[in-house]
Length: 132
Image (tube, rainbow, N blue to C red; front, side):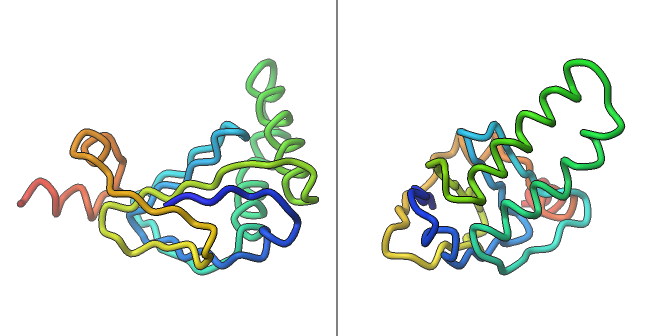
């Protein structure tokens, strides 16, 4: 599913992210992949941005050089997005189908086999995929 976030009102749109879902925000250069013990969550678009911001704050303080500059650049973009000053696409890729965007503006399409095979699913889902 994908959503074009174009206004401050769009930041209130409800998001459900399943434990095997990947979140992409290309305009911010952000990809959130499921981890080893990933849990799903229910939030809104702004909440997703806040989660991204929280994850980036620590590296932005402790890294140096180009990595620090990259983290700080993404943090500035996230801040503009949270203020409704930039348009962006929020994309949910969930092979299990347990994720959704609660909005009539959301677009849905099926992933092809190649896309499914490229997704990182987290340790538990990967083990299940290998058994099948």
